[in-house]
Image 1 (cartoon, rainbow, N blue to C red):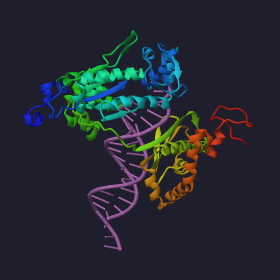
Image 2: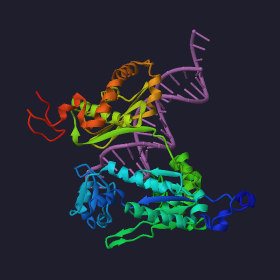
Image 3: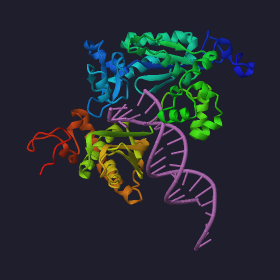
Image 4: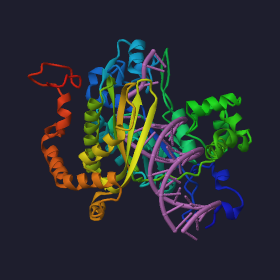
Length: 453
DNA sequence: TCTGGGGTCCTATTCCTA
DNA sequence: TCTGTAGGAATAGGACCC
């Protein structure tokens, strides 16, 4: 090992510019080179692929109902100030001519899988972040594929050739730098128009400080509105100012963990590795209702349907979980959670619903409910859980839910099979059917029907 | 303006048990 | 047998990410 940074007393990055440089001699350890690939307006761009007649128009993907938000939008819509996470009502006011489309996550998932194939042809070390971005550790690919900038441009070209989609690529020694660099490579939108970005931005080791210093603190991973407010109150607005603050001060104001973490990021220190696969720690499903609901019986029925949807997700992942968490958001947007951990892992809809409904019954619902959600954590593979499920639990709730789980074991498998062949709506919990539109009791908007006499 | 749905991680508190 | 304590698990809330 001829070029070990430690052995030679200095970082190789000081010699070759940090991120890659020329391919090194065969046995030398290479400087880490991380890439962050971020699709441009991903959901909206996929919609335009399938509906080319919309190209050039402002297109907004997201819930178009009264309580929806923007999930993605084209740059034509961004010119009007529309951006993701904005309430749809506001987006419509800003851009009345926009075309609103409901999201098709299955479709985005398909394209995302194709995208991953491109990434995996460059390096096996791919860490997806959502459907539309990923970190790639290309440290070991440089000898074969060339300088980082060459690799990055190659990825960009292949994504465009194979998927007709554009992306931005950031390159640096760490995930922190790579992520910020990809943002710097993005197209810039103003009311005047769209300025095409570089597409690729490489930040070399000796450029890191100059690159980070002028950025706003909000640019850092982990600084959201609440942390930004606190930092602003301390007179800190840029990453450079943050780097000048004594870490002890940050730890005092933000807590020891987040404070120390933020001090590291501001100084450009981010040792976090690219992690190819992460096992899910929780799975959940939640629904916001078109209008607030007050009737406990109605809410219980909604919860059963949500638990049923969650059971589908669990079956798909072949997982069970021991902790059931109920989430309730009230009309005033305050949110509470209630959790119960069982001795036996569940995946059957009725068993999950039983626990969730019991939790719901412990909550005061008089102020009106806008959202209900159920999630399961403490996950384990279903086949392993099945072997261990002879233990029916000790406390009353566990015992009851475990018995329900056992009783529904075979039924759940049969339901999954039927849905596989005939679609999700082929089998539904009976208790949810009173909320569906149907015959003798007259037409009503879905989910708004009056219960039959 | 009025705030989705899918998650992760962190902190504080409470409760149980060795 | 009783008491104090330390530590872990469970619980709840909040911030943040895409």
